[in-house]
Image (tube, rainbow, N blue to C red; front, side, top):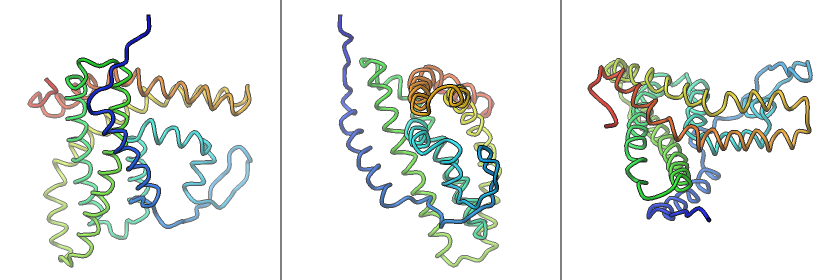
Length: 254
């Protein structure tokens, strides 16, 4: 008997939106920094080299593996890109901090509604449709939140507001946003452990035993399984536990 795969009424629109997002991101990445070189130690070659951060990541994981991680783990990937971006423009620290605080709150709000509705959205559909829809939503939202971060920073830099006004705004947002940030970092940490730690560790081990292409295929399949099956089964429970604990049981997904 063939397994019936019902497509939700959202799937086609989400796939179109994902395609548009991929094309737009290719031409405009809001978190793209000017190329800067760093002195790095190439562990495999046992040499000191000069390379930009993108090259360093590619050396560590390979360009194909980086593409797999960025597509299958968009929220985690985007957060690391944001941290790298913030590090590169810390001369604009007040505007950057306010933008980061707002974006972090945006990530938590998005994740709350994503986890709250992904079960009720798909009561009639199978796991395949849930995975496709959630993956589309995560990629679209991660790019959208990066755009929000970029434009808020631009507005703050161009509004010519006195520095003390920006510092007051940053301070007012700081306490709730730090609490939110700790909660979300715990969620991301859980995500990384469940979806990436085991596949990448196994991939690193296999790279010395079998050909690289075979290692890439096996690691990619493991990441696909861990992100789209294992993580989908437990992400709402993890997020619900975290927001209940951090909100002192005032918020939950129920």
